[in-house]
Length: 125
Image (cartoon, rainbow, N blue to C red; front, side):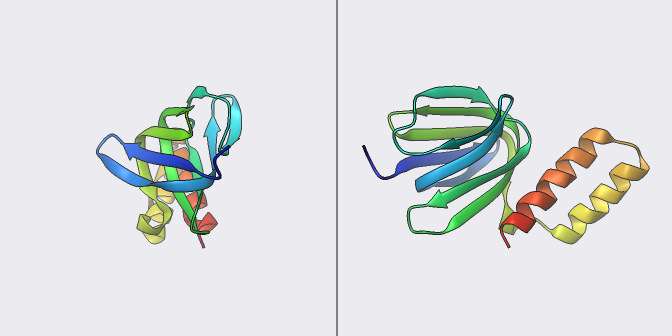
């Protein structure tokens, strides 16, 4: 069994992250899932939530992901997201303003997106 897996995190508009990892944790419609090298093949639907990637170099990459699919086979993991952004790309002050606006407008979907972005940003710190 290999000690790492190849990961591709792709959003509709760009490749967000690509590299070798030892563990990826993502939220699916069936709950949170951790994928390590040698995992059984899988295909699932991604829920909005932070995705955590433990890179082979020892670092941790966190991204806010909103919808999409997760697929794993032959030690290759693909995360195909509708929207995804790395935690270090997130402007926390702007997201906090977006959250306040969403609460004032009683927009549950916008609140959920802002919450996921804030959780991803705080998990990376």
